[in-house]
Length: 134
Image (cartoon, rainbow, N blue to C red):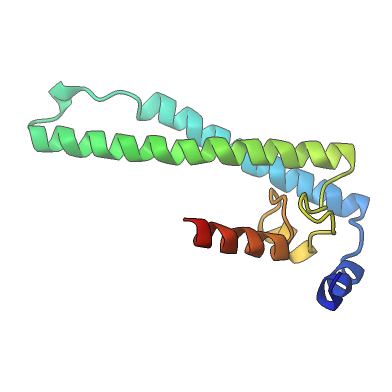
């Protein structure tokens, strides 16, 4: 283990019950927002009525916008899975530990992305690997 990672591990203190509760509330709030957006998409953006659109250009534009909305909702589906997993980890006591190296994830990173499953070092390694592979 490098000096940097052992220093980071020593600096990361276990989360208190109060902090865990704060993260759970934050995750649940983010989850509600994702579900609300999905419901809105289903009720407002699912149908295109060609009679509402005067010409083919308007129809094409509306179809493109609808397709874009669905791609965004696909990303929301992935986010929803991550949020659910993070909430489950709070409940089972494993929240805040990196899935790759099992070191504690820094509190600032959790505050920025509470659904994260990787510490910053492992996330940077993953992104570096993706750039070289892709």
